[in-house]
Image 1 (cartoon, rainbow, N blue to C red):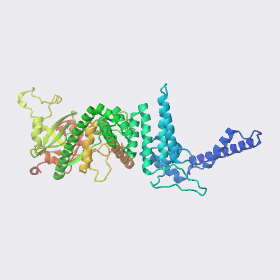
Image 2: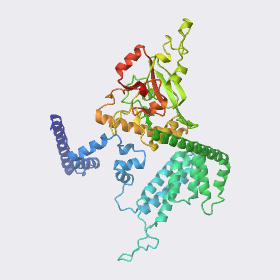
Image 3: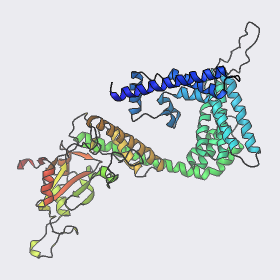
Image 4: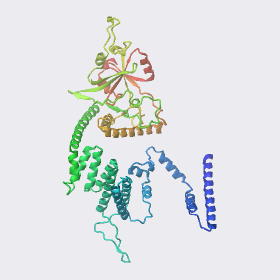
Length: 553
């Protein structure tokens, strides 16, 4: 044990001893007092006694277990839990429920639930009658309904043919007793009433949540369906509002419900447009699924490897602790020169074409080629992009690129490379900055859909869902890397490169075992042969080979 630990334990022992002495002193003074013990002192004395009883602290095993729990990045302290599911994961849901319903265990849960329902109804009616429009009555009503719902969760149901027992004195337990169906109806009513109170407070999100709970417990609660439809109307979720109206009108005996029919006429136009828009999105999504399947099938049959990079750069909306504050790259630093264009390889007339990016690091420029046929020779495309300069034409002959001040970009004077990704080996941890392999069709599909959602193609809600999913994936990557290497700054060496002979076709490059295509975008690095940046690049990156025709080997 260290000196610091010994000192802490000694201070703890002194504190407990001081508390015990203080309690003894107060007890002696109370015994000698003619007025008896002071009420405040008695309360403090009881508190000290409890503290002393609990003052031994945790055992080493308990302390180690707790430290391991709070060190887990996924652990959420119960006081910060935003949902019942998060509270359950903390392991303290029962304790918090007990705090909410502080009783000695003698109160009947069914009776308590009905009592809370009555209190909620009373508060709600006071709010309706209150001329000053005091909103606190509705807040009190919500709290009563929620407390009643918590009590209802503790009720033990009985069978439909249940008969209460008669005790020895001839008394019959009057209950209340609930069958499973009756209890579900009570829970539904409590949730629907809470939604009703929230409607007065204009808390439409809570109206929606409580109404959903209500109809989950009882599908025939037409009032809950109406309140759910109203909440979706105010939240402008038109299709969901239409679905709630339709469900409410399907309840037996409620086919002509006045409130639902009126709301249906009011929202009919919005609902129809929303449903048509959804059908259009679904058709477009089905087409994308078909295209991704074709791409994956083609890649699998030809040996082309696909990869991906993170689509987000941070795991929270705050400044990332692992990112240098002076780093101005932002989101783009993760993408580097592997952006996602949203385009997929396409097949036309039996020929596959790929989107390609030509990056010119020496001049910090790039070109995007939307379609590059697999059978096309790279030299032909480069001759089109970088035609030779006629030296006989005098000094006025210049290349077409305005940024090529020294006229260095001529197809015969250029060196072409691709980067070799995924060199870590199967199952090894990959740094978040680096490309990871897409191993199956499902992963490929999820990546493509997430990229589209983050671009806003599927609306703001799907954008947020995709952002959360990508942040979770990035968080796991970072966590795994830091666990093994200690820091995100412990990066592996930059990936090696392979030089490409211009006489090769695009397919020759794609099927090379060292080639992984990140983000469905074939990326080439192009340097003027004699440019200083080319020499610096080869010092920094290891060139591990060249792809060239067989007759040149």
